[in-house]
Amino acid sequence: MESLIIIVFVLGYLAITLEHNLKLDKLIPALIMMAVCWAVVALGVDSFSNWFDSANHGLVDGFASMAHDDKLHLVEETLLHHLGKTAEILVFLLGAMTIVEIIDYFDGFSTIKGYVNFKSKKKLLWMFAILAFVLSAIIDNLTATIVLISILQKIVKTRDERIWFAGLIIVAANAGGAWSPIGDVTTTMLWIGNKVTTLKLIEYLLLPSLLCMVVPTFIATFLPAFKGDIETVEGEVEKPKSKHSARMLYLGLGAILFVPVFKTVTHLPPYVGMMLSLGIVATFAEIYSNSKFSISTIEGEQAEEHDSHSHHSPVHHSLSKIEMPSILFFLGILMAVAALESLGILFNFASTLKESIPQLGTEMHQGGVSDLVVMLLGIGSAVIDNVPLVAASLGMFSEALDHELWHFIAFSAGTGGSMLIIGSAAGVVAMGMEKIDFFWYLKKISWLALIGFVVGSGVFMVTRTLF
Image (tube, rainbow, N blue to C red):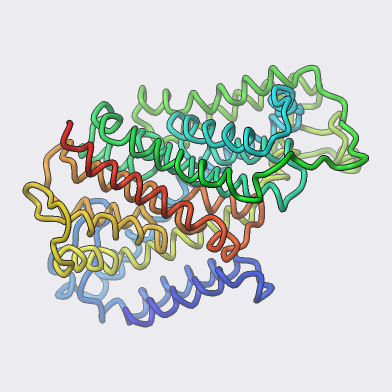
């Protein structure tokens, strides 16, 4: 049965990558893959010998000898646990995307566009790469990608040019998220799990992460795609700028920046702070729009004027523009991976790596884990997902707080996902927002991400002895 689940996952994965060839939206195989994987888990629960407890990051003792009803109850509990964790990400994503759309409703991004008084593609690339690196460390790589691609869409009108910038934004955002405890889901997991501290994380990973962004960006400046100036669309008419555009831009970005502060103070999950931020931004949006306060409903006569800003709720308008297929795709991918994780497949995969890979390179002091194993976990995070692999590593290794192993895992899992577009949350969101083809990214961007990953890993191996 485990083999059947792996086959279903591989077929679903192939269908996602061949989206354009099959003429099938990627959310369809993702949702089918999720449902079939969990159905096989439920139907064949008695044939499984292992069960991974995600809450405790370890295998359940005596699972094989448990009664059938107890196993089914455990399946339901695990499914609910993963749905809860996935929902945290999706609700956070919905909040961030809605705030971005509200800013756009008031033409807030035109304020930033006004500061870009140059058309050089190289300068624009460096601007977005640096912004992605810094913002992802502050507001997390997922939200930073949403914000920056939204701004990019206002500046670069030609999609064929824009997806190149989007690809480098993914690389830079994942690099920026690796050195901050709130920059990436995996670093947050290690931080909350008392494996790393903020100060040491910055000391160990700031330089490797910086070079992981700088080197691919520098190489990209020599590519034909970034030579010359941005093309302007002929006959493009700028719509009238709202008098509240700058105010809503600063309010919206400030509200997103408030989320990590809220999390630090209350110790609540980030989506709670994002909902508070959304509520505050929505309140001002309604006041500024002079429309009837209505989030969930729209009057009949207002619906007829759906495209007119002055006749309906800006929040309702913003919610209607959210990319729901991307949200459902994200749900399918994360829950399908959760099925593999629950059966201990990913845990056993990581353990097998630990035991079977020769101890090449510099070995960790006590754990005996080679650098090669940690780098392979990073590559694995691009193919599968970094969250379950880091979860497995939390159960595999027993090194002390701030041991260099944990910092290398944080870097490897955080930046390794850039090598495939569906290997990170930032990549998945960019894929949805810009309809980026899997194979286009694989041919054009993956090699740059690999170079950044290898350079950053090498720098980490050299500099870790300094701390």
